Image 1: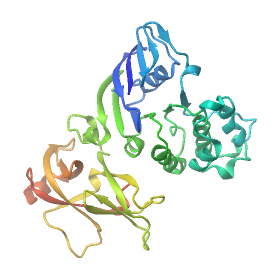
Image 2: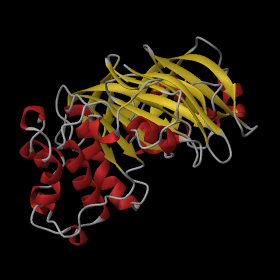
Image 3: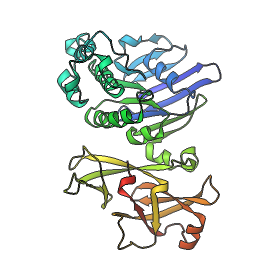
Image 4: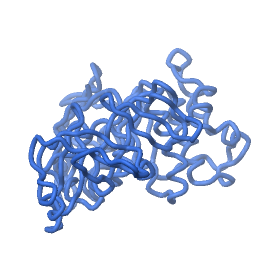
Length: 354
């Protein structure tokens, strides 16, 4: 557990955070620009100091009333918005910079593993100015990993990348999350990134913690702003039943039901998840026939919530212990006679899922 209690005055607000964060998976610090996300990350790293603050990483005291462990003595890696690679060093030398400065007895992660994990074997001989933005950031992440940190901090690592570069780097971040038992604190104001990567979410607004918890619970909480956004969505946990069939689709198992998606890099038996936008879900009272849609999930209607658009409603649906969202018009809800605890079928286009 990461236990922290910070109070840091800023220009327009005071950052107040009293949290217990898990030391497994990805915890996202999410909020608008200027909400205090990076300030909180810098406090965790020891790059900001405020007396009276407290920080425990597992059983290690990093800060309290009489202790302050400086950044270079905290076992952490830090990935900034910009890759900040050494321009005069080739990729291999950039990667090994931190590795060679880590005592041999503390080296838990080694270059071959990181090179394979981040997919940078073909880049080792190049200089940073010969790489794309996404490639440079993958090298920067690899360099941070090769210090064998106990905690990885990532400050909007894709903020400066274009859409193509983001699409390139996301699968590598997923591999990092899935294959290394390394807690990650990930700062972002992109709900798409957070929904794809995060397990735990901390929502910040004007320096205050508005909510924290499991990513799915927060995305589907009617008291939080996620549900009212145009991009309202949910994340469903699944397991791969069959990866890459002859028609290039993978079959996932969600609570005993099948979901077909087109996604590269999956393997049989792998735990994965999919993000489904509320606007991409169509509801039916019975399973349809003679249509092109492959994905039809039997669900239980939990409740209907008002939407920011008065002509629409948000329908929360239960699939086993999980919750998903559909956005429908009020007219459709009336025509179908939608009500709580009703059995309804959620239809989802495979190409719409992330």
